[in-house]
Image (cartoon, rainbow, N blue to C red; front, side, top):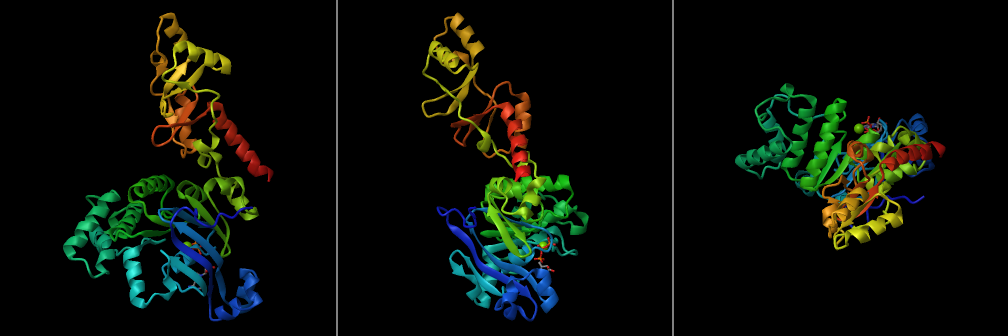
Length: 411
Ligand SMILES: Nc1ncnc2c1ncn2[C@@H]1O[C@H](COP(=O)(O)OP(=O)(O)OP(=O)(O)O)[C@@H](O)[C@H]1O
Ligand SMILES: [Mg+2]
């Protein structure tokens, strides 16, 4: 199968890792240079006492992409993400950021890179317990040493507002809930306005409801700030919800990289299949993925009689009406058309309902349920400019959920 481990070629590459290895222990180089490197983690540990943490990992991340690294505990996620900042030295391999080989960076250049280009949100909050929120958030700028106190506080204030913590500036972390503490961590990473945001299981400690809320907020935030994000999680649903692409790690190896729908519909191996088995298709399939093309559309300049003939030809009791540029104008039903014709109406505009239920192509099925529950006719899929892209029959929402479950179970 095709391994989608390179970012889209048309996009600008931001981070590129090639053949990365990390072996913890004194014999790292020997292991790497012998056939031992092909053995299992357990076997290597037993024979050498060293830990094979990351094994020949390659991927690239496009600018502005939300890239998720997912895997079970111990699979090497934290090690990998830390290697990207050189918080952990790789045993072998290359890391390029914006085309520069960061493994060749001098100490000073590396510091610069960490303080200006990247922001990291850690797995555990990493806050100073005896300092207030403002201090904690401004800290990222303080270590840079080149920003005045006033500016630090102004920028920290801005980040605090961005993550919704206004009013909490002078509280200590202990006064905050887990979710709020995590926001402090995110605000701290944002104050330096980094190009790349690295997040290591930022929401793991949170209870499910708060976690979902934080995920939604991160999506909203990403819409606003458009960073390149590398996000580590061991939660499949979180990965599927947030990731433009997902890399799945097992025992230090990346076993699959793909867009969420690929990972669900064609898992690379049993490990991934097991991971995705419990995934609800409702959280994965998108409106764009299940929409159909209607047999006919109606156009604003058509008369009611032409429209009624079209509906009879396609044996439907409705059709969507669009403008010359295919912008969705509304829904026309057979009943309304008949009434208009009976009243000698001359324009199709008299027969349409202007605001039919619509959705955009990236909406997941789960979020279509409330729309579907209210809808008497299919849901129109429109793009950002309001152009009509396709329609979704209410029944097909449920059919697709069942089929995709069966497809996974059959493999
Ligand atoms: N400093 C270290 N020395 C020795 N082994 C280490 C070190 N850091 C990590 N490891 C080992 O490397 C492997 C990968 O660990 P890592 O922390 O990257 O996993 P992870 O995927 O982030 O797990 P989790 O989901 O639990 O955070 C594990 O077997 C771990 O025990
Ligand atoms: Mg970890």
